[in-house]
Length: 178
Image: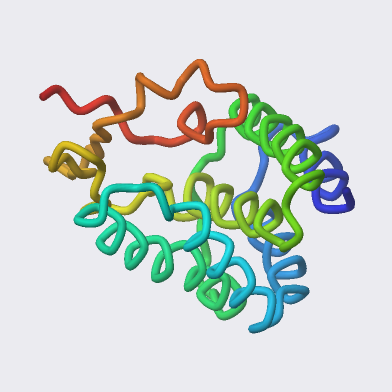
């Protein structure tokens, strides 16, 4: 669980958590993910969505493949400087949630899905300050993540807040009223 220890180390004893420090750890761990790992995770995502409605499955998989798996390369190549303020308590809570998810999911997942899930979730939330599901991500019922006047809205956020491993708790999107 080196990833989570590394995040604890950048938060302990610091008044603030730097997005640059987060990015450096994410870059290190994204470098451990090969194209074969990404292919295996893609296959796992396809298998897990086999019972999802056909009209929703294709659209959602395209978004997940592009933004979830594609973000690993984006992280590796991200040389931008970020000076946004990271809420230390929210970051610590997010890391704890992802660590628990990783421990539980590693029992059944034969791929690096839990690691990629953590890397992308933390990068998107705390470095980019974007919702974990990108704008346009479709959900059943013809609903999708939206952005209005710089605020992001998700149609399923409130429904998933009580789920112990859901990243919805850390996501910056607000509940979409529909």
